[in-house]
Length: 116
Length: 114
Image 1 (spheres, rainbow over the protein chains, first blue to last red):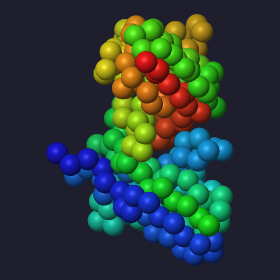
Image 2 (image 1 turned 90 degrees about the vertical axis):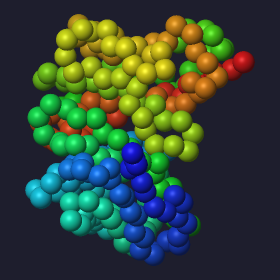
Image 3 (image 1 turned 60 degrees about the horizontal axis):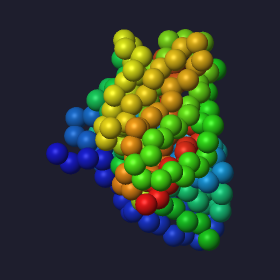
Image 4 (image 1 turned 90 degrees about the horizontal axis):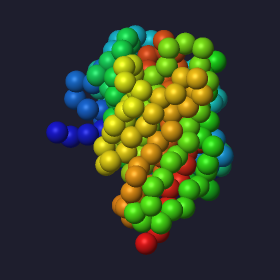
């Protein structure tokens, strides 16, 4: 079946512009995660959605970052007024559920964001 | 607080040689541990996981790892590597009781040379 998909695969933007990154999780997966992979910081958790519960936003680095998940499926990560330090690969993952015994997270290929 | 340390940022090795990628963790609670692999320009793929039970865990592509509670380690091993194993490898542990979100080590770049 289809895995996690992300779009665009690459995004180049100018400093100060807003960007939107999209994630389509595996159908039926109720948990969705965003991570950021950058040279200086490695792989970092950003935000987590589980069903209809309020998202865990504890990893968002600043208020320029926000995310939403519509209809419990597709998620969009928005970065406002991008800065050069936002340049990174943004990875999305989904799993069947996020509570109790660990469930494997399936990762998308990522969106490479370059802020000039 | 939980944390993960990967002791080697780069590991060069010749084809068909054995390899060990080191991972140490810090946790005061029951531990789940994972190894992920990232091939160039791709997302992460789960190699293997330790949840409970046998401390020797076998994963895909001939990799295995051993959970050692006394040494707080979860080193990844393969007896004979292939060129196709060239990738970045990440050790990870979930934040305790926080929905499964992961803390990753800094990654180890495995480079297999002919």
